[in-house]
Image (cartoon, rainbow, N blue to C red; front, side, top):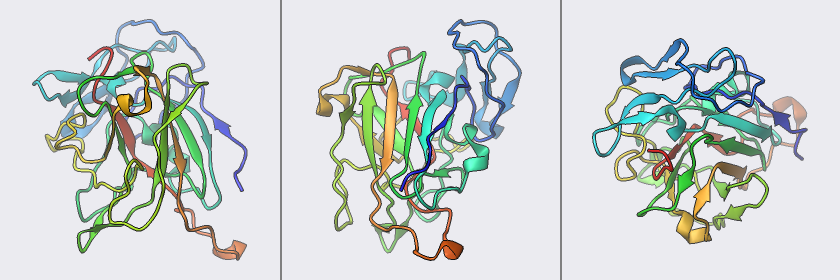
Length: 260
């Protein structure tokens, strides 16, 4: 059973470290505020005091050698409806799912995540940018799977996209026997991380799970919804419930962006 939805109205552009939410819906440019350090990977600029979204880069090399804007990642958690046995990463929300991924590669699952819980759901926005249908993969979703004997330790999620936040197009996700899981998210290890030189918007190198808007018949999307599609429910004994059940979201990245 899902708990009450948690809403985040802040307009943050951050990485793994959470910040206080802003209450403004302004989309003005403005000058960048104080930077949030991402180590060797560069910086993502904090929102202005008036809540405006800074039009800045995220300090990451793009496939063409340019530098990525911060809004190539999630800029806002629109809503979060934790499922049963969620909780890991909740105290770091919303910042933990904003900004670039913190991948651990084939053998290590990142701890820079929030667990959605059994049948939990999260809705993210990339505004003021947008995902557009371009060549190949348009969107990457990063969970924290790792490989055991070449088989992914997968916790799957169903991905939907929307341009208005109301009408959704859903990529088919039908959990079943692995080792491959079709259009579900959550089964490809993540290789890109701040400072390691791997671009988080390069589908050939970043890892994560790729989605092409053409596959669901939509040309542009500003919102991404992820629903846990795990098949293992919480233990019946309340005193033994874990907090790590379900899809563990690290980040999303816009490959084909309206504003590169």
